[in-house]
Each structure stands twice: as structure tokens, then as C-alpha cells.
Image 1 (cartoon, rainbow, N blue to C red):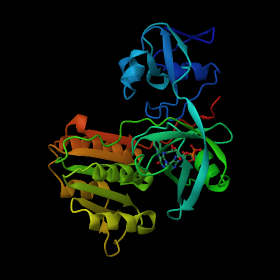
Image 2: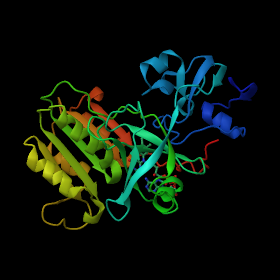
Image 3: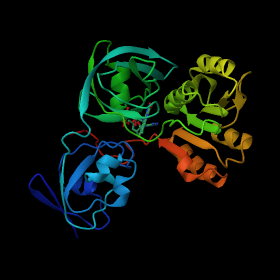
Length: 331
Ligand SMILES: Cc1cc2nc3c(=O)[nH]c(=O)nc-3n(C[C@H](O)[C@H](O)[C@H](O)COP(=O)(O)OP(=O)(O)OC[C@H]3O[C@@H](n4cnc5c(N)ncnc54)[C@H](O)[C@@H]3O)c2cc1C
């Protein structure tokens, strides 16, 4: 079995084990969050040994070339010497500018945008709480328009980071965030292409950024945004999205309520189902899916089967970082 060398110590891997699990099992404290190759919190650099292709999915080409990889997604094939990268994942200290409710359980958090903080709407940042616990939140703001970074955070009672945001974080507080990362964003080009955006809950945050970005960059093809919740109260930014629908001929907002009869102006049914009913043929479309993991993964398959090319499907499952049941506290 391969061994991992980290900070001068050797750790033996068990069959099928990731580098992250190997280190955690042996009591090594390392940063991680989603454990699913999405949030990039656990990125390391391989000083010896080859990262597996799966552990480099979704990371920048420049970082791939310099042997950066995600230890949660790497089942090593050979011995590896790994290290915490120096520059990558560099963090920023920033200030809370605004914190206000968007619905009964969703908070709009606006943070000052640090100098030289580059991002694309729809990417996510990692936010670390006062106990060192890190979680990912998507960016709804537009770099060319907004001086702040905006996240929509659903308050999960007892949630270590969302609970801290809801209950403890105050205006003017200093918080630590990572650089933005992720592939779920609008890239200019193919301006006539139809876009399908489907999100549940705070999955609206990246979609709100992506839709506004596409419109601002002159996208001419139809843009259909489906936002779903079990109840009408769970939907938010309804007035803003209706106003966008009014203002742009090619933007279409569908608010979807999955439980009971929807009120006037909203649709009854699950966002994912309604989107596919309305658009059963997705050949040539670009698709963005964000929010609950089961919805995103299910719809990823269905939109592919409906004709969307794999390279045109961008998905951000909001993976429940506690699913493993382990403590996620960063070192
Ligand atoms: C790429 C990415 C982008 C994300 N973007 C956003 C975003 O824009 N807005 C947002 O609100 N969240 C987003 N998330 C989810 C977010 O990172 C956290 O997982 C979430 O806020 C819960 O963290 P916590 O520390 O508050 O709860 P934890 O302390 O991790 O969990 C507390 C309890 O809540 C349960 N739980 C955790 N997450 C959920 C959930 N989503 N639904 C129901 N129960 C849950 C856990 O199982 C546990 O029992 C994103 C996740 C990823 C991977």
C-alpha cells in the first residue's frame, strides 16, 4: 500500500483510502470541508508522486501543472510526499458591510471586496468562522458593478458556520475568506445560446449572479431561471427577479413551489420537473444547476439525456459538509 509523507512523518494508506482520509485516520489535522472534490479547501501540492486525474478535476490549469491536487479525491497509486501549498488558498481578511434577512431563514451577507480580489459571479468563496470551521458560499454579486461580495446564507439551526453568521456575526466584524473558485459561471461567447438555470433554496445565489452577468455581457439567447422551494415563503428576491423579467425580453423567471397549490404568479411543482417539462429538448443549451445535492445530481443526468452537452452543464451541488458525521474543524 502507498504511503503518504507529510511534514516529515510517514502515514500508511489503507486500500481505497483517500490521502485526506489516511491523514485524518491517523490524527493529522488538515483543512477540509466538503470531502467531495468541490470546495477545494483541502488542496495540497505533490512534491513527489503523481496526483490522480480525479484529484485535479476542476482546479486551474496552472495549478494542475504545478502538481496541486485535492487530497479528498486522491486515492494514491504510488507513495506521495505532500505539502500545504504556500500561495494557493491564500486568505483575505475582510469586513462585514451588511447583514439582512432575504427570507425567514436566508441571510444576505455583504463583505467588503478586498483589493485585487478577482472572481466570476457564481463562483464560491470559503468563509471561516471564529472557531476555524470553513464552509463554502456562492457569490451573487457582480465584480464589474458591486463593490461588495454578496452571499446568501441559509441559517441551519445548530450549523457551525451558518449559525455563527446568523447569531454572532455583526456589522464591522472582520472575517476570513478564501479566493473564489469553482467552474459554475458565465463565460462570454455563443451569445445566442439558450441558457437554463435551475436552483433550489440558496442555490439562487450563484444563479442570480450568473443571470445578471450574462445579461450585462449582452447575452441575446433566452435565459430561463427556475427557482424552487417547498413553500412560497422559501423563495426570495422574487420582486427583483420579476423586475428583471419585465426589463429584459430574453430573461424568464419561474418561481416554483413544490408543496401545495402555488399562489398567483408562481408555479406548482418542483423546479427541476417544471424546467424539463417546459424544455424537454436541450440540445445546444447551456445549463447551470445549483443547490441541493440530490436535485443537482439528478438533473445533471436528466439534462444530459435531454441533449445538453456534458461540457455545457455546470453544476454546483451544495454538499452537506457534515454528511460524513465527522468534525470538520480546520487545523
Ligand atoms: C460549492 C458550495 C457552495 C455552497 N453555497 C452555498 C450558498 O450559497 N448558500 C448556503 O446557504 N449554503 C451554501 N453551501 C452549503 C454550505 O457550505 C454549508 O454546508 C451550510 O451552510 C451548512 O454549514 P454549517 O456549518 O452551518 O452546518 P454544519 O455544522 O456543517 O451542519 C449542521 C447540521 O446541519 C445539517 N446540514 C448541513 N448542511 C445542510 C443543508 N444544506 N441542508 C440541511 N441540513 C444541512 C448537517 O447534516 C448537520 O446536522 C455551499 C456548499 C458548497 C459545497
